[in-house]
Length: 101
Image (cartoon, rainbow, N blue to C red; front, side, top):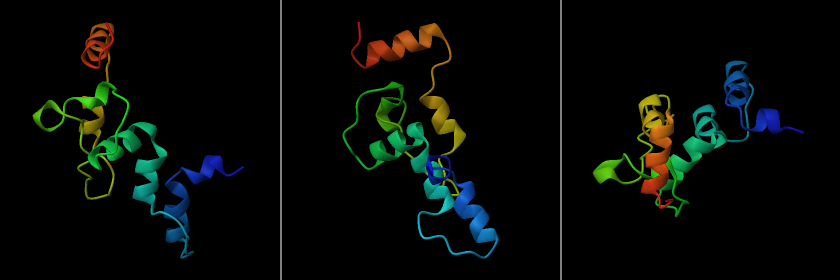
């Protein structure tokens, strides 16, 4: 199958560099949609109802994270970091905030 290439921004970027027209999303769009965390952040930005997760907080007014795409059209690393838990304590706190006791 094409799963390995269909979510990889290297495909449209490489084809573009070779002068080959790619009928599909651009590299930056594929980068955001091909990454499950980025896709969740993008959905939240578009106000699509989402299942609560650690990225449901940390955005404006402590609401959901917002995409705020950079010049390359991708979500900046610092936004990903806000939705990431790195310790057991952070994970427990995120679980508590979304309703798990």
